[in-house]
Image 1 (cartoon, rainbow, N blue to C red):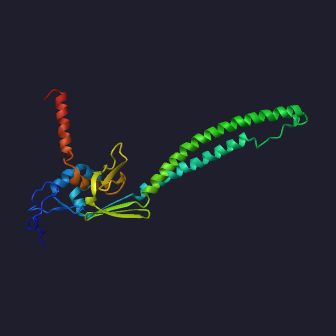
Image 2: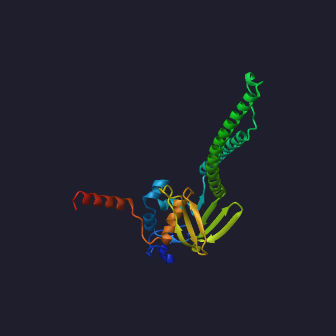
Length: 264
């Protein structure tokens, strides 16, 4: 059987309002229909470079989007917590050893040749105490600096790992399902009033966000799966202009070169 035409239902593109008669509408996970031209222009060639497939064929095989951290990413985050934590324990041991040295809890026996001379024994113990205190203070200073540095890094990485643990955000038929840890929440795509989805691999960016109607903000890490596709969907809803294509960028570069060379 042939595909039903868009004319029968009077469908138009939700982006450009063009009549979709004679072509198959592209149904996106936000429960809206778009024309293939708008989808491809918004996705640009960057989507195909990332996934290896143009946006329209890819989205037709993915009626729902799932944003979650991959096992490799979770392993990296876990190691990012474990290594600083181990070094912070080593720094704590160094700090404790410095405390032992300062307290002079370890008293060496005087050499045999001065053991019967109380004055020389007293002088030997005084020198040992001074050296032990100086060494202990140095150990404590180094241990405290490294403990603060590695403990802070371990806390930050541990917080990042715990936040990413069991995080999952799905979009299907215009409904978001959010879960992380014991928390579960459902909200519709119409509840999202602002969106800033950072493309994976964007230099200098660490996260994007969805702004909800009640004032809350949901942050999204750049390493989440299906994030680029979610960005295309959100851009089709909120972005007023289309991003430049590779052809547009190449044409702009050629025009700039012509101006620099005095050819135009």
